[in-house]
Length: 107
Image (cartoon, rainbow, N blue to C red; front, side, top):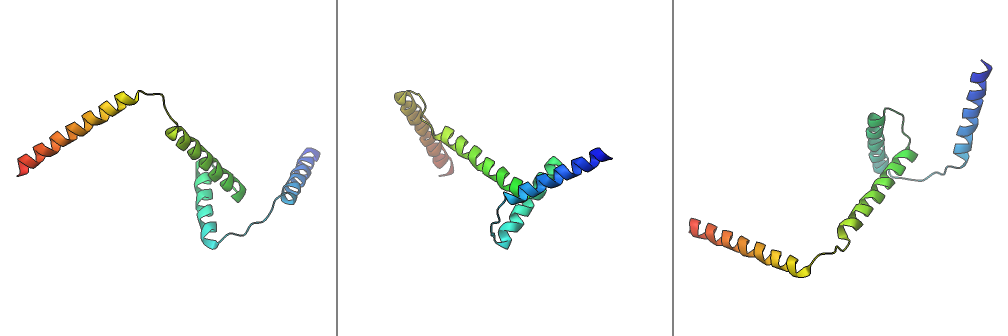
């Protein structure tokens, strides 16, 4: 019984400390509803209660991940430019032949 009381006190203190270091932000009702939807999705996925702090952290982590993927996709690669040009010309020539064949077929 004493252990349960001690744990309850520790949890209460942790919650108070957490509240002291949190801040309040103003958001529109529309944004609040969108955040609530994301929170519901996260809760359904994890099976645990999710607060707005966790929702915002989740969304920020997705942005950071997507930004890294974007940078990787746009990063220069080491390829032979002449080979790439040759492949592009070959593809364009094939596209032109197909287009001419379709025009001839439907003319």
